[in-house]
Amino acid sequence: MTEAPVWIHDQQTSAAAALAGSECLFTIATIVNDGAQYEEMRRSFDAAGFAGDCEYLALDNREGNRFEAYGGIRTLLTRARGNYVIVCHQDIRLITDGRVQLLERLGELERLDPFWALAGNAGGTKQGLARRISDPHGENQRVGALPAVAQSLDENFILLKRAAMIAPSADLAGFHLYGTDLCLQARMRGHSAYVIDFHLRHLGRGRMGRDYYACLEALEDKYARLLQQGEIQTTCLTPVLTPSRWRLFVARLGRLRKKAKKLRIEREAQAAARED
Amino acid sequence: MTEAPVWIHDQQTSAAAALAGSECLFTIATIVNDGAQYEEMRRSFDAAGFAGDCEYLALDNREGNRFEAYGGIRTLLTRARGNYVIVCHQDIRLITDGRVQLLERLGELERLDPFWALAGNAGGTKQGLARRISDPHGENQRVGALPAVAQSLDENFILLKRAAMIAPSADLAGFHLYGTDLCLQARMRGHSAYVIDFHLRHLGRGRMGRDYYACLEALEDKYARLLQQGEIQTTCLTPVLTPSRWRLFVARLGRLRKKAKKLRIEREAQAAARED
Image (cartoon, rainbow over all chains, first blue to last red; front, top):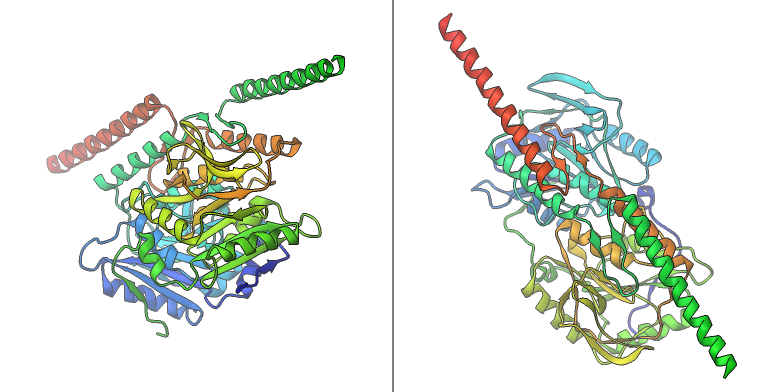
């Protein structure tokens, strides 16, 4: 036979182990419709230490919107080689924090929760908003006890641990709320998302136009479909998908009764065989 | 600056485009606790054309269960280089169908549904079971109109399109029902799974011991938690997650009223300013 199998002897879940073998640590991925803005952003990353073992990927929207964000980010992720993929807006600038601070924060996350998959500088948590940012609303904002578990992440800066294989929904599109979708996808996979203490400047204000509401309702409609309860046919039994503890209890009782009946029939058949 | 950005000018969602640049077409990934069995499996793959641009990855459970399936497959996926990752049991044998037939079936799927992410030879569908297999229950079984959209896939043979970035849940473990979990994860991402006409032999019967029930209940418990409805705090609005059309309607009505109120206040402020 031509290929010898590669034997894997130990679990390599920790990012630390995954890092060791890689040549590319960071992919910085951006949807660009303004080349000059993007160059400024790149310059600030370069100055902050994101060079050498980094790659920059740019989706070219300079001559019109060839890419929307959900599909665009999926494309970026299939091309990315970095262990960490930073998906960010062209109008952010690294100012006080850089590569060293980011790696420190990620190391901290890894110790806290090896199943973290996403990290951002702003987002929603159960306790309300959390953020570490300078933007038109204020300089040097620091809200929430960071790192904070996030229900959603603001799209200005989102870092994905590539090994976790989280990606935006294939049945959503547009330029809004993909940070929320990514957090929901991470949660469904059993991973988590965090707002971390990584300070940068965002030049934009974030607008909520008609587009925003279209994305919001599409997101709600999608997850409404997913939350419908039902049964899953498998080659063995049928798991029941329901948020109701009561319906689960009834399903499991039914399974127990079926099992007991099967055992009784087997016992009776054996007894009949003995009597013959 | 050291790195020039890589500009991406066109969407590369089709598998055809993704295939072009890759040296490794298939990763064949297996959890192995019996080296001799595995060698037989590998020999049958080799004879069926899976050589050259293929890699074989084996999780080594020969000296005890170092790996369970969910985490093991996540590990395999982070190591895999193939465009297609076949996760299969050591006790399957390729017999009539091989590489040529598989590529034909995948091409067919791609034309039918570019968002397919998973393909197997047996599984559950809305219409009941579907399968294409020879196993201790019967030779040359052909059940269902294939390809058929699958709610679950049998674990003997599952192929993942790697670009879709579907992986098993990080909060489940064990040796059962990861095919069902993978299908659920694909559905949540907006991708689909299929039973295809790819005939092979499975030596095992599939057992449902105490382990199976533990995995079944863990799966149900996990998805019960996910199906809980709630609101998501974002940096802008709060999307509502609910299966209820009625609750969605009420939430959207509330948003409209809030928007109308904001507009009224703005208008009144403008009017007051004019009067001053």
